[in-house]
Image (tube, rainbow, N blue to C red; front, side):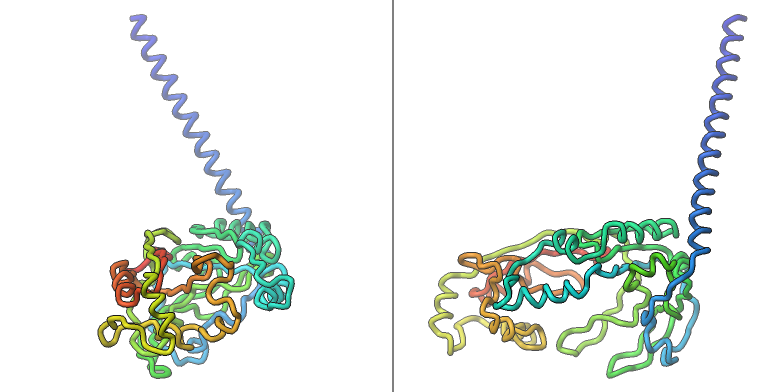
Length: 343
C-alpha cells in the first residue's frame, strides 16, 4: 500500500511538472508572438518609401496581358541591393586602378577592404536582415562586400512585405523575341522609410528580363521560377596549363593560323571570345597588362580569368575537349551553382 501511494504521488508530480512546462512554453510562445506583433506594428506605423523604376515597362504600358494572380504559395528568390556608403569615391577608385598615371594603379582591394572603404555599413546590412526576418523572409546568403542580401519567401509573403501584387502575364513578341508567360510585380515596391533609405533595389520580382546569348540568336530556354537549394554551392573545379610547345609554335607564327584541329562547325573557337561582342579584348591589350594584372610570373593568375556565365550545367569534359583542340590555351574552371542551380 505504501509503495502504491508513493507511485501515485510520483505520477501526480510528473503530471504537474508537464503542465508547468507546457504553461511555460505557451507563455514563452505568447511572448514571442507579442514581440513579433509589436515589431510588425511599429514597422507598419513607419512612413514608407517607394523604390522607383522596379516595374517592367511592358507591365506599366499594358503591352503584357494580365493572365491571373500568381500563386501566393510559390517560392521566389530576391536580392536586396544596398546603396554604397561612398559611391563617388568608389567610382573614382575604379577609374584610378586602371589609370597608369594614378598612384592607385593596380592597388586592388579584396571584398572586405572594399566594403570597409566604400560599401554599406555593417549596421545598414543588419537592418535589412532584421526587416527581412521580421516579415517572414528566409535569409539565404550574406556577402562579405555587404552590397546585397539574398532572400527567399512565398510570393504571398513578398506581396505583403513590399505592398505589391505579383501576377502572371503573357508577353507578346517583342524586338524579334518570342512570346512567353512571365510573372511580375504590378507596381514599384515599398519599404519602411528607414530601410528604403539604405536600399537601392529589390531584384527578382519579375521574370521579364532574361539573359540571352551574346550573339543575339537563339530562344530563351524555359526555366523554373524557383529551384530549391543553396544560394551558392561549389560544384568542383578543373585546371590544365597550356602546352609549352603549342604556345611556342603559336608565338613563332603570329601572322599565321596555328596548326590545330578545329572543332566541328557551329562550335566556339578562341577568336569567338576575342570578338567585341564577348568582351573588349583590344581594350584589355591597350592597357598593356592583358591578362596579368597582378604581374604573376609565368602565367595569368586566377584574378585575371575571363568569366563565362552559363545557364545550365557546364561539362568539364567539354572544357577538356576545347583545350585538346587549342592546346596553346590554359584553363582554370570553377563550377558554382547559384540559387539552387539549373541543369
